[in-house]
Amino acid sequence: MGVPASQAWTVTSHVIRQRLAGRRRYPLVLMLEPLLRCNLACAGCGKIQYPPHVLKRALTVEQCLAAVEECGAPIVSIPGGEPLLYPHIGELVQELTRRKKYVYLCTNALLLREKLEQNLFTPSKFLSFSVHMDGLREEHDASVCRDGVYDIAVDAIREAVRRGFRVTTNTTLFNTSEPMRVRDFFDAMMDLDVEGMMVSPGYSYEKAPDQDSFLERERTQELFSEVLAGRKKRWRFNQSPLFLQFLMGKRDFECTPWGNPLYTIFGWQRPCYLLQDGYAATFRELMDETPWEEYGRESGNPHCQDCMVHSGYEPTAVHATFTTWRGLRDSAAATLTGRL
Amino acid sequence: MNEHEAPAGTARHIDADGVAGLVERAFQYRGDVTVRTDDGCSVTGYLFNRNALGSEPFVQLFEAETGREVSLPYRSIAEVLFTGRDAAAAADQRFEALQGLREEQAERGWERHGA
Image 1 (tube, rainbow over the protein chains, first blue to last red):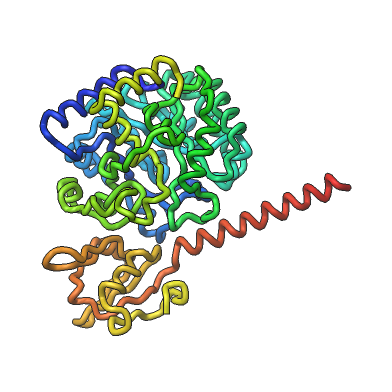
Image 2: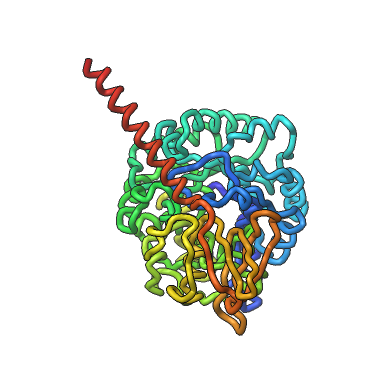
């Protein structure tokens, strides 16, 4: 798989420390949204539809760092909105990498080349650009509702790779995705020499403009089985093989909504990155006062029934890897052989 | 009257909905609201949070004019007006327009291809 050894060890030791401390619930990845403003309006996104005065708001760097310290997760993912629109993004990334946090800066890459040319970032094992790519040119441009974005992103990926940055891609699949086209897309991303790919089904945001393209659970499993069948050895994924097997319907997991908590301009979002059931003022309040039993598939919560998104299930896969011999064995086997 | 039948500016009175139901609809709404309190004051902004648990249920808003964060207890709320444009509905309209344009372009392409 595409995760560097030092990062894998950091996550492993974090999980072991949490287990030794007897913590049942702990975060793996902090999702940090310094702003909600974006320079795209994607059909499947329900995160940016707010009044203008809300979109103008942003967290301060101090607020971001306080959230990182409070949460304690070893990995910080910076989505949004578009984080490259955040005026302090260079300073924020510098502070996070100085604290030895593994940072995934999630970007649509429209501004990436410009920021690279401004030398806003320094290559580091702690920094990875996670570029939003929903497929080949036709599919991606349709998904982001603007022509030409695929070509801009490909150009920016090439430039980032050339400059020595870690680059991954982040792909959301919908019910319009065609398995063979997705496989061709994986080949195209590997040709760009990205470190690894992340892939997930889209979450059916109630506020997303396109409500017809979200995948139901069975269709998700069919699609991923077709896409990942006879997985090519050259395809590197920056995620747990057990999670990919879950997407293919080869194993069943329950959601871990606290695994990737979200801190945003509204506070700590309950219960997870995707559902908006309110906000807590502190991370402790989020963990202690959220009625976790009301979420996840087993709870019967209708909002959770079709969700198979990585923010909820990748932590479960990581947990399974480190807490069961079978999980460890299957994960190691998939990593070594490349078979899912 | 349900949410979709209520254009921006429609008053929501406590008598009809109960404060919890009214606050819930305001929380789900992606536009500004105006909250009038029983002392005659009002706050206009985005209602981003509500907490009905605990001894003192409250709502939180970002005031539109000042950006100030305001917290109000449920018991002080007399009325909520949906005064701002629904950003989610506006995004739906833009997406539908884009879809229409794409379909039109595709049809034109087929016509040219056929000719």
